[in-house]
Length: 364
Image 1 (cartoon, helix red, strand yellow):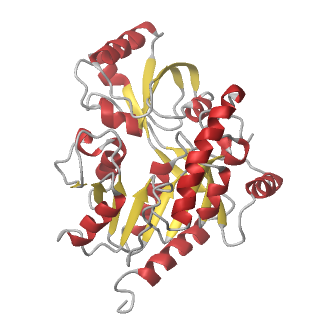
Image 2: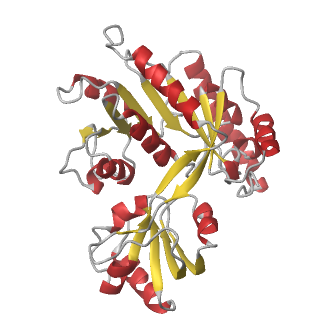
Image 3: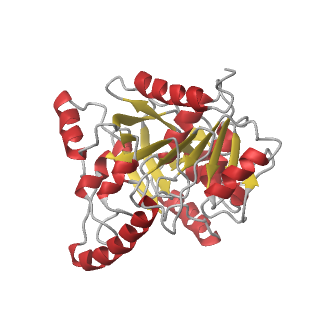
């Protein structure tokens, strides 16, 4: 059910009040455009993000937008490149590595090699560079990854993602809960998407969720779920595993913020799951490699190792993985599916916005 992954540390609520005061002051300064200023641009900009700590499906939703727009427009994705080893603005190319641009931008670069992918912790500077660099100045639309709270940029469409299992209306501010700002921050969104929904939601469930979210009249609400693809080998030694193939024993390696959903979704397909959970964007070390080798050696055979697409970008260049591990480790591709026939309406909303606001829209 919705909100079933939420855990509140009630004894930390006094600290949440202090945190909330600081966040509220920051939002007030942005709202009043006093001291903290927001910039607008003459190019379509879509922001995708959340107001919680942890994964709500930002990357697959950005990838959905890229897939939908890339054949019509020149698309650029701008990310901060979390935990990358470089600084400042960097426009990725075929020679870019995961440590240079970060795991999520690298994942998108590999999947969409003809889409412009750039990283910059200063989003305003990143946009300025995209619009002034000869190779990218003809960009039609910029997608801002994880930028709902980066209020220095005013996007044309602000998309807020809300995890079905961690509904923000039931959560609390950090550190008692996982909210990075009060729930009323959702009022800045033009589009709200409740992600990771069960595929069998009933009409009554949709109405309950709509009432619970208490959106403004101008806001659009959509629902998405996750669809998994066939397991793909990380290394050339491995083999593709069909999506319907049953798996006897699985070592599940995750370095993501919210692995609970993946665990739940794999249960029906696997006889047993041995989890190895690491922190989000974890930088795997030599001792981690040894632990992975040992864990795979210890579980009953036959056995398969499953990891996420994002984790695969950090595992593929690791030294020291055993041959058994290299032959049996796979990543699980995912894509999002709109529920309640929302896909066509969502797509048309996005396409209309880009067509009407692109810089050469008059000629078009």
